[in-house]
Length: 295
Image (cartoon, rainbow, N blue to C red):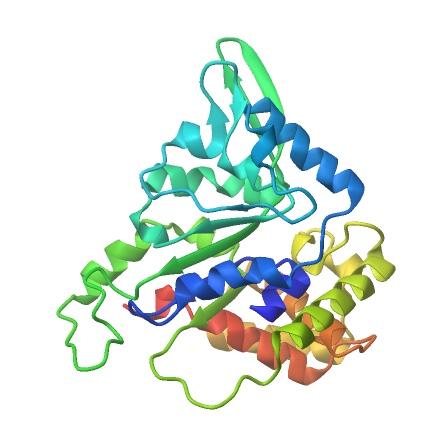
């Protein structure tokens, strides 16, 4: 959660019911700093367009958690008056899809554009509206259709084909844009490695380092594959290590860019001006856990 908050990385929490996936997803908001004045105005304008200007979160990043019955119109926007949808109401904040595989496949696939470009264009009855939708995507899901996979003293009877169909609802294109996949487990023991206050401090420090490197609004997780070499460079040795690890994990070029951006976030959180080999390996490990490896 801390790494996702620090670098504006999309994240998916995987695990059986009762392992704290939803709680972890909600907690990311508490780690983020207040919005800048300009960002606050942007969010307020979007909420005002929907007629809910009294409900916008003020200086705090908005958190939207639509129900899995949401329609494409409700998620993306449109309807009478071409109003902004959930993806725009989550602008500068979090869009949490709890039990993401329960959402309609067409809704999930439609998220690709706003996740990719941070804007959404709605066309209806010869009229087009362009809304900002730069949000951090947070997904949670069980590991299988019945929910018993990973549960203590339970036996999952789902076949590999059933699990594969379950995950195909999300689609490879959307999953490929999720930088971090985190497994949730029962009965974790031991004290947290750091308190909430320290976590917020590390997140704030990492964000400051990113913005000092790339300017206002710069976040590692927002850098696309086409410009990542320019903004998040690696030494030749680390580039070779990254390529080797990607071949071992059979991951795409887009996934390699994702791993690179997470590695830079790890370096920023440690106050370092360059990525190290351990960052690459740790970031690749965060990407290696995924639904495509469950079936």
